[in-house]
Image (cartoon, rainbow, N blue to C red):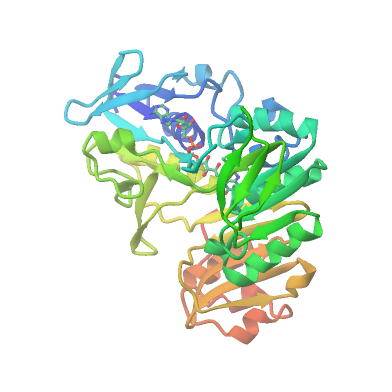
Length: 415
Ligand SMILES: Cc1cc2nc3c(=O)[nH]c(=O)nc-3n(C[C@H](O)[C@H](O)[C@H](O)COP(=O)(O)OP(=O)(O)OC[C@H]3O[C@@H](n4cnc5c(N)ncnc54)[C@H](O)[C@@H]3O)c2cc1C
């Protein structure tokens, strides 16, 4: 690799920062430019709905790298700068201040942004989103003041925010159009468990209920629901999912369809332009389809994988999706990719909130989730990768070690 080459990374969050680190770690000696629209140096988002939000973690602990890291590794970190236009034919990336960066390779790590609700009052003061550290600081200050909050949406962000707000003693109402929280990903059985966990902690769960408007004089004072009622509140948090930030890629003519489309080595339809993290919809060799994963571990692993591909040393990215969530004292990890299943098998008593759940279609294991049970992740992953028929009775039996169900020679996941 010649020292004159320039590799540019658009998006200075987890995927982008880990990609920059990997370029240096793998010996790339050219110029590395990491461009980020936010003014904060790259940080991790999971604490923003958990300990940092609750005021239990200091700001210095959320960053991906220590303060001096970028200078020490000769990475040009351009913060508060937004990439506005990409010209893949000319290999140029234009920033908001007019500077044009010539690149030899470009990584799009522009992540995702929260969806907004297109309803009256959504712009009122006191109606919050939760994506970046500024959103979180505003909410952290709100939690300090106490009061009543309405959380719109019982996905991961809404559910974790609700848990943290209850832990801080606020009066919390969750309004969710679906019949159960987290139901799209986890299904009915697990959704019911999470509903009960929140209800046990004193969250009012208004399920099967939409929100029609935020109302108030200048700032939100109440939420009007699809049921015709209103809920008084001091503030509201909207957590209705995210969408990949694909505008830059779409405007440049790259293939985009719910994410920047890439091959298994994370290269987009434009040669020399790669994508990783929440924004990428990558061909996945194991699933033989394109998937986009909006989770921390994917950004953590895909950023480095893209960096390796940029220097021509990238094996196909075939990590299985993984995510975690912490709500109150209930921690979980989920591995795999289940979009359609015909049943969920439990190992252990779900009521104890210490169990493993498996999603199956026919004999095929699609995903596994350990709740309050640890050190089973490698076995679950090995089972998923083995793709052989599983014996349901043994899967459900806590006395049969999971490792014993993994067929001989099917291999362990890479660490
Ligand atoms: C509150 C919260 C809690 C979470 N908790 C969990 C959890 O418990 N478990 C889990 O698995 N996942 C969790 N996640 C998801 C996880 O944080 C994301 O999957 C991860 O942040 C994705 O990283 P990324 O680098 O791909 O994108 P992002 O983190 O979205 O970062 C993209 C960056 O690119 C910048 N950018 C965008 N466009 C441009 C541009 N044109 N020019 C320059 N910069 C640009 C953005 O400003 C942003 O800084 C959580 C997310 C949030 C918001």
